[in-house]
Amino acid sequence: MRYVILGKTGLEISELGFGGIPIVRLDRDTAIQVLRRAYENGITFYDTANAYRDSEEKIGRAFDGVRGKIVIATKTFQRSAINATKQLENSLRMLKTDYIDLYQLHQIAQEKDWQAVTAPDGALEAVIKARDEGKVRFIGATSHNLSMAVKLVKTGLFSTIQFPFNFIEDAAKDELFTVAREMGMGIISMKPFAGGMIDNAEIAIKYLRQYPEAVPIPGYDSIDSVEKVTSYYQRPNVVTDNDRKLMEKYRRELGKQFCRRCEYCQPCPNGVMITMAMGYKLVASRMSPAVSVNFSRLAMESVKHCTECEVCIERCPYELPIHDMLKVNYELYEQHLAMNR
Ligand code: SF4
Ligand code: SF4
Image 1: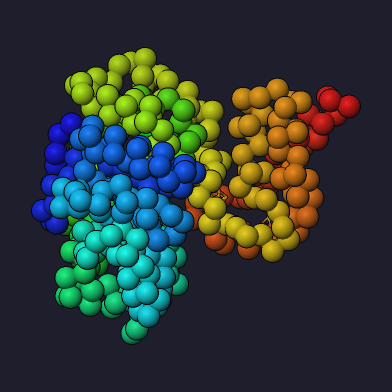
Image 2: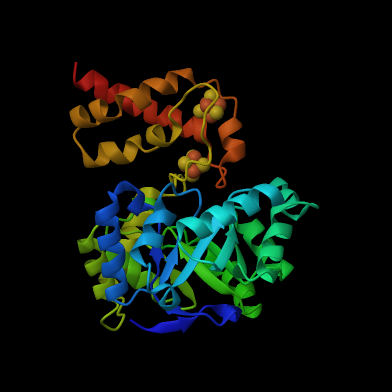
């Protein structure tokens, strides 16, 4: 494991980070074991969020006593100063610390988010105040929207930018990375396995290691997953022709109609279980039709209630044609149902 400097923050962190979402699925003791194994294997950068249920609390408990040896990034979805301050205080309590190394404004995707956080009494004002008081060392932002991420970087207000980056979602490597590098910002790559769509961790990491300026934060849900991913960092990175072919195969199969399962489109006003229904094609490609119809029945039946209102499309950071994609998946589901009658 190498240690790198996170942009102009000057913070030294492991070249591989730890994403705090999957530990919410684990019971507390297992989560703590996973976190501690990550630390033993050299990971010193932990990214979480107030919104990730008990993730902050688990991190706080796991690293009580070694706080000074790790770098903690967390974030707030709140847009107003008063609510952001409340969340920050809560994060400090959960994380058992009196300072956050990197406090990020979470998912600034649309112009309205930007307007809200920068308004008088907006969240940014509260976070700057917290920095002045020493509760926050550096301020960052996260986004799933490329043009907004570029805009955030160009404001010069943030020390880091966090954006999805993997060999399927690789748009960030051009303008975003270039501008962020020019501004001396730290870059954090979220969703290094495309939200679970890339089930070959080795090639995912091989791809990411070609961009050492961007620190990936995979999630880990077991000690084995920590061992596996950290082991890739114990050898030089060699991307073979075969790896490239495999990546290309994933790209072809997932195509541009790729739902990242980020859930920002939810809830549907008509009760459609959008994310699960969007994933039906993938589920069906991995299971038999009989298993996939049973597995996804509830979600696929909910698609019947779609009125094509497009509320979800307005919320989707990737502007996916959601109701058209749902329709295609529903047709496939009906075919599978017919095969099993
Ligand atoms: S378009 Fe369909 S799935 Fe999307 S919010 Fe409207 S009803 Fe729900
Ligand atoms: S449809 Fe869009 S917003 Fe909804 S989960 Fe998929 S990528 Fe996210």
